[in-house]
Amino acid sequence: MKIQNVTDASFRKYGKVLEGYDFSALLKEMKHTPVPDDVVYVPSVEELEALDVAKALQNKGFGGIPIEIGYCNGHNKKLNAVEYHRSSEINVAVTDLVLLIGSQQDITDDFSKIEAFLVPAGTGIEVYATTLHYAPCNVQDGGFQCVVVLPAGTNTDLTFETAKTGEDSLLTAKNKWLIAHEDAAIEGAVNGLRGENITID
Image (cartoon, rainbow, N blue to C red; front, side):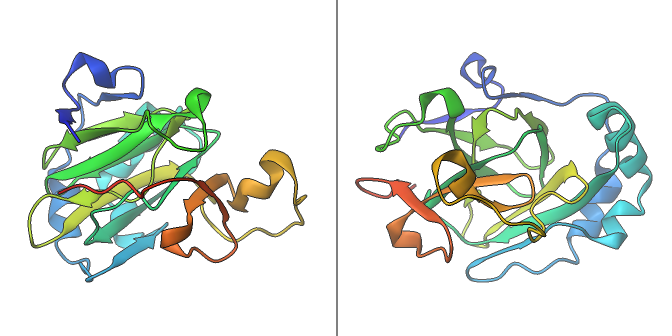
């Protein structure tokens, strides 16, 4: 699969590169977070949310609504699933990483339109609400580290019942609609990705 760069024009339909932020303290604090052999996602981390840049992310990035700042770290080379939210997501790459992404408008059962984009270390991006995404892929053998910023409560446990049909069946957490590949064996997820699980070499 061709790996493009988030600075390429082809990324513009999925998101944009952020400017005007100082991520230095955020990158430094992330060095204290673990990088497991698999993938770990933590929605909210007090130490990250206490940094000065958190206020800038809340006000400039999300128009002043409450946010959560967490991380997704680990080792991964596969698509495994795609998710989307009703809001943009901000990612800050602590290490070089690759995102496998597509458009919600292009949802099919084979996901042949998924594209790969390199996010260089230190780069912040906004991923639009209509962009399908999931855990990043690592570029280096040491794994990947990625800051994840979302409206507060996103990706936390559901506290209400959902229907088991249509789009409602994809809601696996608050503000998180998920479509999985059977290879990933994600408990409670709809296995809607068909064919070979996309893998980055």
